[in-house]
View 1 (cartoon, rainbow, N blue to C red):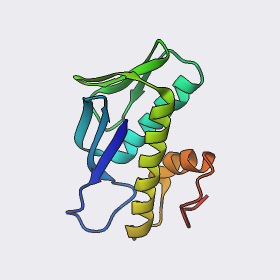
View 2: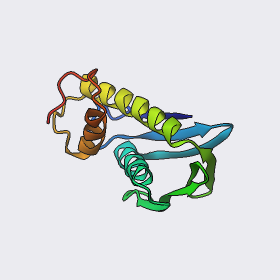
View 3: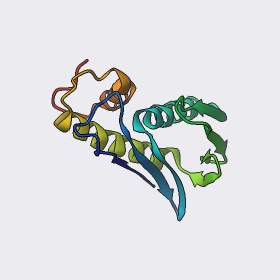
View 4: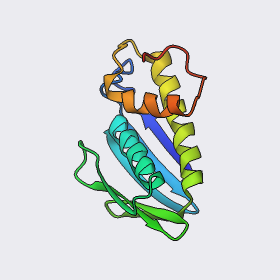
Length: 144
């Protein structure tokens, strides 16, 4: 399981309020992807879906706000399926998804922290909170 992203850096410095780029989720030969898209919306949606499944919900529809389709999480057996528009990834382990989401979130935040001139992190606060909840200490100076 991997969650990969890339930022569209044609506009210059990274702006945490407009993290435009592309994202793909890959697992066992299945790929779910979108782009150009707002990565902050996607990460907030992935975190919301993960948290709802972890709390025992069986079906979660996440509105990605800036996107025309919902991100759908459905518990199946010991795992879940995740789908968006015409893409579907079946048989995902919640634990594998958690580790991929945490790794990808941390990588995104490190990039934003290092290269952003705008220190207003309002739009990515849910991502920051998710990483902090995991007691991840690699981030230096993101605000509370």
